[in-house]
Each structure stands twice: as structure tokens, then as C-alpha cells.
Length: 323
Image 1 (cartoon, rainbow, N blue to C red):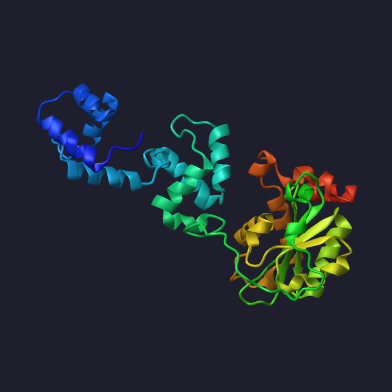
Image 2: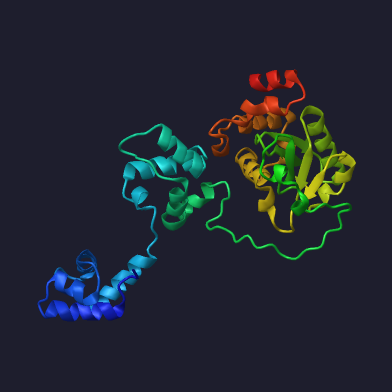
């Protein structure tokens, strides 16, 4: 049944002034008496005084008032926990939600990751900078028109379903992390099934350096396909001798796993850092820390737990576990 509108509110006001009971009003309006009772309790602007225009204004405000996050707003213990995990430990809303569920505490309770997002975007926009996206709103995913000069480019729409649904290991996404000085870069490859990341510092984002980084990844791990965006660093993809695919222009979410991983990398290497100060051992340590971070889509296990599915070397598995 539709919500009570202004016409019905006018009638309710008239019937109340006539001294009719809740059940009589409900019968006259063909509604349940509990709906009439709720209307009078919620939208009387002063106790026991009901005015149809003011009641309608109150109802409209309540309709547009954000829902789904009052549990966090009204629970100071829960709110402190969520904001602390977000700010101090850079936990994602999904990871915070999982921690609340598995480490239940009566004075905190449990909320979904979506409720946490809504709470932040509605009431704590200044905390949005601690989300990995660092955006204070969600972007619309509408691709723009674009033409690419990359040779032998295969569209992501030709990528087989078994790669799309992450049903088998060995399929990677590639990207480049840039810094303000542009004096060095990080070539990043992420395996889609396990979430395992391989990071290599390179002197430039040239196609040659990217190809070198990819060949090193291919040397150590099972690489059955690679998905790129439309940057020029992927221009030598055909020299990899591995099936490759390219996202739609301006549609970086189509390789969302590597984009997510880039944001994790930014926690350790901000954009304004001098990349020349980053050593290869620093890169290896960050790679280990990220690969040891639990993920919601892995049932809160870490990518490193699945290294055996993609590694070509038992020694590499042993070395990674000892870093």
C-alpha cells in the first residue's frame, strides 16, 4: 500500500477534530488502524496536535533522511571502533564488518560494510580520506569515447568467462603506480584468483620497462593472461607471448583488483614521496605486507596462503613466508 499522502493527512486532521477513533478513521480511509496510529505519533508537531501541512513536511524530511546507518550513529562504542579501524589501521569497511562479526562484543554489535560506507558518506565525510578510494562520493561508471593506438589490442569483452569469473588461477591485471616527481615508478601485477601482487620498481612507465616487469612476473609465477588499461606502457603486450586484454577506455573498474591493490600500495608509498628513496627491499617488504593482508573475497584469508597455486618455485614460497 502506498504511503499516506497530503490528501489523506487533511482527512485525518478533519476526522481527529471530529473526535473519531483510530479504527473509525482507518475504516474511512481503507487503512490499517496501526498505520493511522503511527502517522499521528510520528508527525504531530506538538504532542496531540496534528496539522496536515506540518505532518506532511515532517514525513518528507524523514523520507529523505539517510537510513541504514543509525546503528553506528547511536552507538558511541561502535562508532569509535569503526572510525579507529578506518583511520589508524586503514581497514576497509568489509574488513571492519568482518572483525565485528567474528570478534563480537555486546557493546559494539554488528553492521554490514554497506552501512559503514553510508555512515561515512553521510555523517563523517572527513573520514572518507581514510578509505582506500579517498573519495567523498561514489563515481558513476559511465565510459567515455576513446580511440587507442595500441597494436593487436584485444577488448576485455572478448575475454573468456572462466577468466572473468575468476574460476582458475594464473590470470593477471597490470598497472603502474606513479609519483609526483615522475623519477621512478612501480609496475604492479595482481593475480585475479588469489589477489597475490607482484611489485617491481622501474625507471619509467615505458612499454619496455613494463614488459621487463611482466617477464619477471612470468618467470616466477604462472601467467596465463594479462589485462591492461589503455596506457602506453602496455603497448608491447604482444611481446609477452601470452593472451592479453584491454579495458574499455576510462573504465578502470574493469581491472578493479589491481586498482584496489594500488590504493593499498599508496598507504606505504604516498604520491608525494621521492621514489628514488624507495629501495628494492622496501618494495619487497610492502609486497609481503599486502600479500599477508586478509581479504573479504578470500573468506578473510590472505593471498599469500594461496601462493602455491601460482608459484613456479618452491623456494619462492619458502622465501615469501620468511620475509
